[in-house]
Image (cartoon, rainbow, N blue to C red; front, side, top):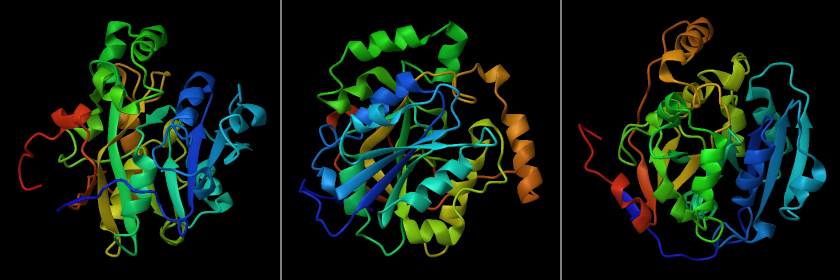
Amino acid sequence: MILWRRRQKPGRDSFLSVVVIFYNMRREAARTLYSLTAQYQQNMDPDAYEVIAMDNGSTDPLDTNFVKSFGKNFRYVYFDADTPSPCAALNYGVQLAKGQLVTLCIDGARILSPGVLQYSLRASKLYENPFIYTLGMHIGHKPQNYLAEENYSQQDEDKLLASIDWQKDGYLLFDISSVALSSKEGYFSKITESNCVTISRMSFQKTGGFDEKFKSAGGGLVNLDFFNRMHQSSDMSPVMLLGEATFHQFHGGTATNIPLKDHPWDKMAQEYLTIRGKPYQPFYKKPVYFGNVHSKCYHLFGRPKGNV
């Protein structure tokens, strides 16, 4: 089912808290935080949402003045992590959140497209317990695991980003990006995770949030585990945002920025097996499709394969 909506300013009856996790990401944070400003996000009043920048034990941390420079609704929290996993920081960020709705970005290296927040707010009104998510993209002409094999660097990415005026029109990011491996062939794929999800704070806390037993760098398979659990919950209603995405910056990520031959999947899968007592298997529930299709992402609306 696809629901279309005209653009309109969100009502003030909903307040959204965005929790985004950073670890040694000064370069990436500047872009990610800008993409969360009311200047960039379309039809968003800064009084209607807050951004909580959680620094997960960085050795080169962000600082309060830097984060607050993006707007009066931004705040900085340094989380003294005792593991390289982002799970505890995410859960703590939700505890601090003022909003009834929370948008969670487990990886602070991801620039958001300009309609993510407004359409997340609108989609949240569809169901009592919505689980709203969108597509993952990688900046570059192919997924960054492949680019890592070609000596792709942050300098290459800086040139790509400088070639477009994405700060003025974030949908131009689709022109210099490729779909992430976990997002397969686009919006109608049976995707296995999302790096930007929105859920009610009450539902998040009821389900236990991100399982802090996952202690690996980056959380191992915790993001896939969380995605599975939300889809397996009988009272959760998944909603895929069409026409929106997050765009991953190259920063030496544990799983995204290394050649596939060196990918730590086996280690992460073993951690999952130890915690859950069974091998990881993706669980898919057909979502409602909601949003405004932008011409820049037409290529991601190919005909789905199988019973999607």
